[in-house]
Amino acid sequence: EAGVAQSPRYKIIEKRQSVAFWCNPISGHATLYWYQQILGQGPKLLIQFQNNGVVDDSQLPKDRFSAERLKGVDSTLKIQPAKLEDSAVYLCASSFAGGQGTGELFFGEGSRLTVL
Amino acid sequence: ILNVEQSPQSLHVQEGDSTNFTCSFPSSNFYALHWYRWETAKSPEALFVMTLNGDEKKKGRISATLNTKEGYSYLYIKGSQPEDSATYLCAFGNTDKLIFGTGTRLQVFP
Image (cartoon, rainbow over all chains, first blue to last red; front, side):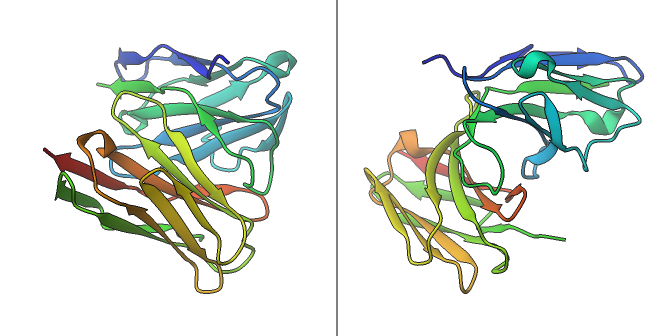
């Protein structure tokens, strides 16, 4: 079974530039998550999709971050314009069922962003 | 603000030593407690998902216990090996979200 695919693995940009990350979840997984993991901190949920609808985006900085999940499969996360504090690993995860945190999450390898 | 705390932050042990970590979480609105292992340059992978007070789970040399009434979970590694070196994350699931701790970074020296 193919795992969660993410790209790019690494990205270095200057502040005020834009960047986009892509995620392809495990086939059949209805729920998709984007997490931001800053060095020394735990992963923080940015946005959760159930199929192609948003379940939770309360911690997404909407003035600069956007995410979409077209057709309930692949997802993209965009940052425009990037700030220094956006330097982090962006993890995509999927699960068969969503909600209540009872379903095991399957993670991609992450996209490491460095903003200079 | 829901807080999930893990201790210690980091741990260095010799091969063959047994070790354990703690995850503390709110005791209200509990649905599940997850443990993940995250090796460098790899994706985090699930070790256990526990939902019942008193749950004990085991996978090889790794085991975990859960106390939802007092809000803690322990992860044990028996006879640590260098390949156990990783960051161990716990995550608390309540009614609508999964909240991660900051992790315990384990290094096992040969």
